[in-house]
Structure formats: structure tokens, C-alpha cells
Image (cartoon, rainbow, N blue to C red):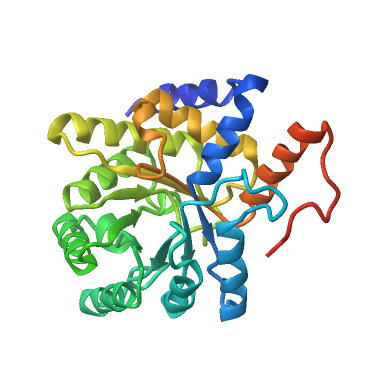
Length: 288
């Protein structure tokens, strides 16, 4: 793995600017690819309902703003989210399988997945067993992801690598290939629960693995960036990175997601600036 080349390429892509004429479309695309997330111990049905309202109608004053791809919640909140977004086209994603550690017995984890799917989850985000991976027990990692995929039934499976704990680009590439071979529909950078979250260079490493896997098998796997993505500029960086590495066919909610809590607010501020020439005040967007 060419670390220097990878980081230089990621930096070069991140330095590209967007034409003003294309900015609105890019910001709308970013919104359509967001998994609007709340994963806190203080989550309540009311907080989740508020999140879902924002997911469906990000700007109550502007119906032209598109809805997000999904809301992402804990299993306990899936029924509340499912009821809130019913019939809107917003999917419900649930973390499951001993998130964020992934260190329970596999039967406990798959039961958690089945329960979330039974409650209405359309998508399941699990965490790769980093303990087994770093210990070299790759067959166990593969089998656990495969069992998780089976437990999902018709729901899509996103496998979180937690790149900040894997020790470098080559392990991330290897973990990406392993998760995809075991049936992952998406591979995802991070839980957002550790300091070392998503980076463009790690995302590029994963995107190149997706490209290699698609070339080998003919199967297209999606990519999700998560952890520390708070600004429209960061979202644009990931859009460029995916488009340049995997092609425009990956720039859809079916193959690309941004997991975030506060990103949507910044995108709405940027859209407001395009409309008015200035940023809105602190009341322009909600903080739900």
C-alpha cells in the first residue's frame, strides 16, 4: 500500500473547488445521502421523533430541500423511528450487534439484528470484530459478518471497520475486502465513538478496495463515511473522492452515505447563503 501516494491523492481531491453554478445540486445530493444520526444514551422517543421530522423536511420553510436517505438510531428506538417516517421514503437504519464494540457472542449479536429488523429497520449497521481481526482470526471475522448478513434478511448490511483502530491503510484494505466477501452491502469508516474517526485518505483506501472488489466479482458495494463530518466542505470532499474513484454511479443514496448529526445544519446554512447572499442567524436551522 502506497501511503504517501494515497495521502497525496486524497489531499489533491480535497483541494478541488466547486463551481457556484453546481453548488446547489451538490449540496442537495449530499442531503439525499445523509444518514441523520442520534446515538446517545440520552435518546428518547421524543428526540427521535424530532430527528425524523427533520429528516423528512430538513427546512420547514423550503419544500425544495430534499429528504435525507435514512435516520440511524439505537435498536430501542427503531419502532419509534419506523412509525415517524412511515410512507415518506426515509429509511430506518439501526446500529446492532453490540455496537460500538462488537464484542458480544455472535448469537447475541445476530439476535439483536433480527430484533431490529422485526421492529422495522431497513438497514443494519454492525461493527467488525476488531479483536478477532487484529488477532489474525480472519475466518472468524468473515463468518461473523456472513452470519450478520443472514440475520438481516431483506435489510441491507453496513459493516463498520472502525478504521482508527485497525493500524494503517493495509489492514483497512484487508478488512474492507473481508467484509465485502462476507456479504456486506456497504462498508463504513467509523462508529463516531472514538477520537480517530473518518479521514479522506482512509476513505480513499476503502473506495479503492470497493473498486477492486467490483472488478473481481461484478458486485457493487456501497460506502459510508461517518465520524467527525460536520461541514458542507467535508461532505463535498467525500463526494469528489467517491466520484473520481468509483464513478458517478456511486453518487446515489443506494451506494453512498454520510453518517452525521450536525452536517445537515451546515448544509442548510450554505444553501441559505446561496439564496440570500449571507448566512442566516442562529435561528435559521434547528439543532434537534
